[in-house]
Length: 181
Image (cartoon, rainbow, N blue to C red; front, side, top):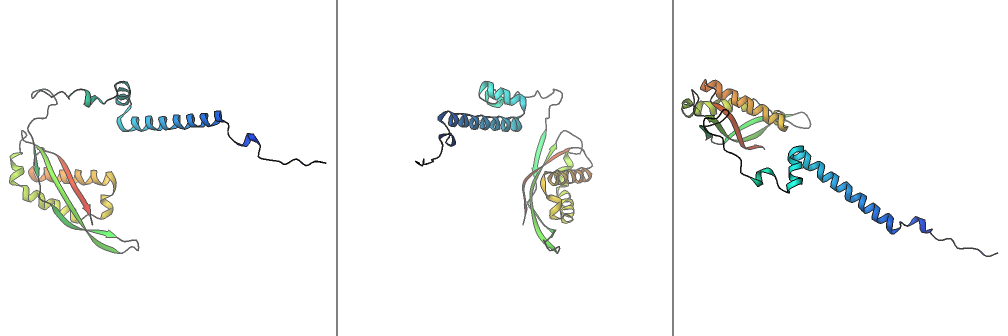
């Protein structure tokens, strides 16, 4: 009786057509991931415009400028930077021990110079900075985690600025640097 040697069947190796189909499937998955990322980053309407024209709306035409007296126009905005603020904050180690860390903060205040009380901002800048330092020293490192921590920090500093100037002129705080060390 003759024995037949068994070798790997040809069905175990992908055929050239199977390789092509797998490659096309991978290509479709990559395109879907790219499209999903584009929609997530820009929003559905702008993503469609980018796909239709090949460029974003900002690149095609300059943004229209708002007329000075138009409703919603923001004229008279001024920016005043503060000197760098460095304070100690508390931190908790992995073992639960309280320790001290440094917080370095560079900020600028945006205010509407046309609103009443805006002229007091420059005069009361030292008092504003002092109230910032008082608040910052009360924080712990966990208070500044994530985007919600940053939003809470900006909201509290803006609230303090409005209280010291007794005005709604302060509009926003811009944070250039926030370092915890």
